[in-house]
Image (cartoon, rainbow, N blue to C red; front, side):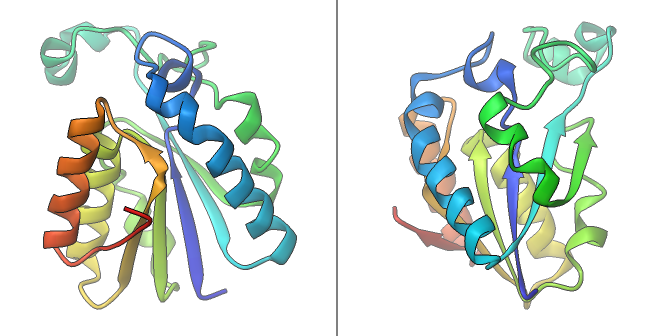
Length: 174
């Protein structure tokens, strides 16, 4: 397989929970359609990430800057939303990440010619992971499907897409 789709943090807390947004819920049907097509056509490998925090979250730097307890490991909010769980049997990996960018992701995507990002939040975790991957593999095609992502706000989503485009990521459906 030449392509991987990286599904970032489609967890209860980011869609329906404490950090959920209307934008995340509105893009969900498009993301489900995309993943159904990918699985049916076997056109890309899937890799899922899960934002993962411990009970001491509020004492961390992130917790001090974003004092909203979320994605505590093994909590309901940490779980992938049910609409995503049906795709995990087809996934190459489901990885936990303790910060915005996944330090494991670069080693997992090494064999691919293209990686495409979808999920949440465009302006935090998607941009962090896309630019991290681009730094490790500057010749790799790094793309983002703008219609299958949601930011913390529509404005922040647009700003993040522009920033990624400026860093030579390919932005689809913007």
